[in-house]
Image 1 (spheres, rainbow, N blue to C red):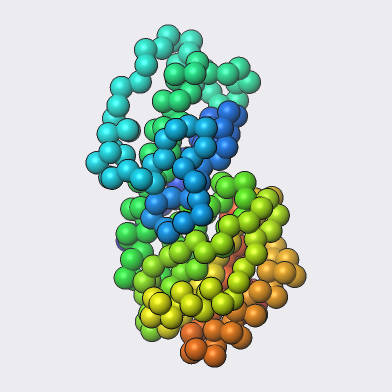
Image 2 (tube, helix red, strand yellow):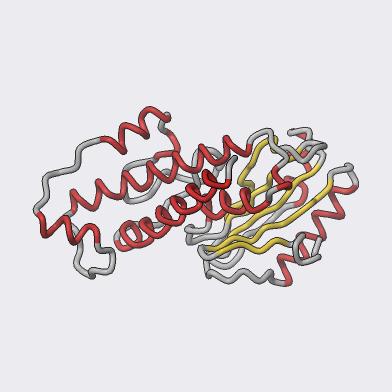
Length: 242
């Protein structure tokens, strides 16, 4: 992927995140994880009646191109200014929310497709950017595992556990079972901090070392653990914690 393309995705990802927070966050829960990752415990996006994870690419593009309800010039200015405290008309709010969720889902899928089959840890910032778009905006913690082959090429990504605002329970047995099922030779771990802080807690460090020790018994390497939040990411490997 060229530098230009990656910069474009980075800017677009940031724009979508900010727009979702500004528009959807006022009236509905933050969006759930995307369809490009297996998330068996997630329910459809609450409060909107719209779950982009279940839609094909063609349907998602159709959502982006669907006509908006007629609005006046004043309402249009209000829609473009997320700092205004006044509520948008319900139909306009719903239309904007659907388009933002559809755009976010398309971007997530395309970014993950670009990573598929590549030695992703050669450019970990690409993976970190996808992780931020996927789960940094959630108001609960999730724990993901990135399965890699012997050349550190991406096999798949799974969200294995979902928690609360401040914690997520991780079960090493499930991680080992899934690593064997995917034939992984290595893996990276990731979770989000809804609070926005990036520093790992003692619990984060303990579970990382526990998983590293357990996975070594089946000859699977843990090569990194990412913490992601709206403003950035933290890499255990970059800080010498792996």
